[in-house]
Image (cartoon, rainbow, N blue to C red; front, side):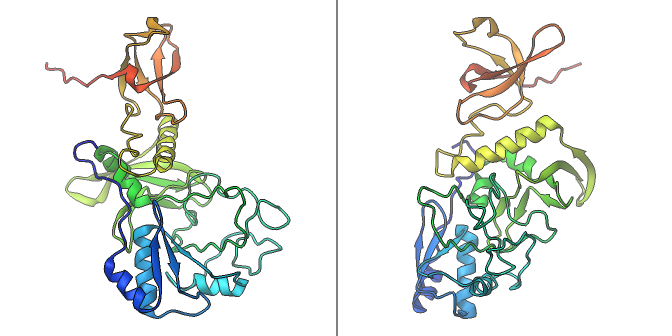
Length: 326
């Protein structure tokens, strides 16, 4: 790992919480690489406050909980279970499918007659179009997909830790603008329970991103607001997508660190297939593509126009900025 960089990890379950829950007949099993399975708890019955608090702490640390052996909950039972945590009230903002067993349930399926199709195909946070985002989201899987459902979860605290320190500092200055509602959310926030810095961005519902500069003598006072350019937005989205896709085990979160940064000047070197490009300089205009292992570099072709190339990081030398002395 690079010097000064945090090792991204999902924390272990605290022994004190395991002991408390065990005393109530509830067992916890850590899932890999995140989450935990809960057994011995019936969601149709309201647990004690100390049990609810303990489970909420595990949720905050591990990312999510899977409540095993619940059978099929009725619509009312699912709504009641969903209100065990957070503000303990429902806040529904979605369409209601005719087959939904309760108006608060967003029923999804790959069969249009049974549920709503094609929801959230990209990394996102539910409720990001609201000023007060959802504290918890409950999923009731009535029928598990036979060949993989395509639903993936990521730990957004571990994602922040996986960033290089300079990237962390920059992302903490960014604010997303929701394309549906215009609501603003910081790209990095402190989780209210775990107190861990976490990333937060809806890749399918962000219309703009602002970069905030604050007064050096007063961090609460805004000095400037700058709207990110289209290429900067594209790079941010690609970086965020690549970060969450990469996973956070040691050695697997170096995806962003493996390539030059957006807008860095680089020199092409060591190309054998197109040696005429060696020595040419360009500007990085994309993040590392996980499929091809290349980054987008824009070079001046000499007639005032630009050409965009896909080049491996090993064939790019970052040009350090040199201060001129007058």
